Picture 1 (cartoon, rainbow over the protein chains, first blue to last red):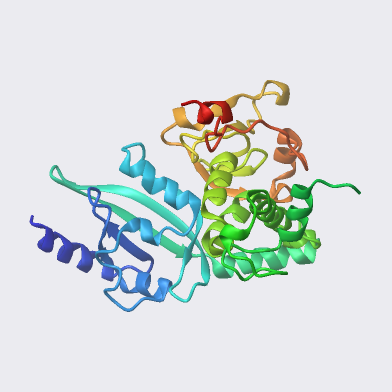
Picture 2: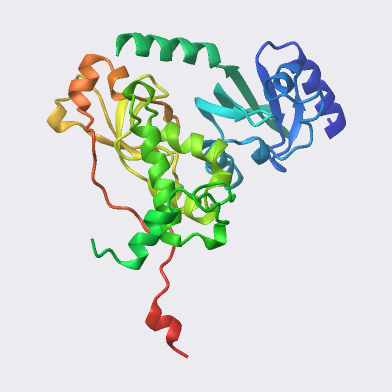
Length: 132
Length: 186
């Protein structure tokens, strides 16, 4: 499967997902496809994420280090709470999972899934304030 | 008080910002002394971890993430990079939940693999005095899921790990020091 065909197939796959999702080329570490929810989460217009180096989207030291580890061949997965930065500079608390999908022997992509934790975090902070 | 000129300079400049928006003099980065840049960063980090209202305290991991994500223009890039390298992504003393759901205490930084620190894991089958230190670098399937405030731990994990308010540890050198003798040698 050539790269444009692969990118189109991936785009159709993730467009139906509720979570914010983008897919990353494991060699060039650039965004191959990103769904509407991902663009909304980051405050971007649809299509603006495609082609961006994934390191540009890393807002925290943890995400920077993870993608450096990926580039060095030291890691291919992570699941943790993190933050992303919107285009207006504000931060969004997220749960972020990255995993390597092997589509067939010749192709693999990184799948980045993010869940907005803003409401959960607000509830946790409020609970803590009431308890303290 | 007979403070040294360097100390008084730090006092005068530790609220200045690298982007020139600090106070009292709105100095640009190159006009702020190296010592003041360090104290400014550490002061901010400490304020985020230990605010006047303890309910608003961030974990060390959250504080580092916030400084990096939202405030890095305020701090000198080299100082911030060295600070993160020394502290690690999860600074020692951090209480964390691992990806398998167990709770643990970070005990040392792995500067080559900051996402893989060494941790003491709460395992009810092992006595606290025999608790094993797990090097996450040797556990490819295990990682840190999130950092927690100590009070968010279940009671049994809190008693087992007994996180302290303060922790002492040695830093690995983040930036090579310039050897004056070496530099002067022809």
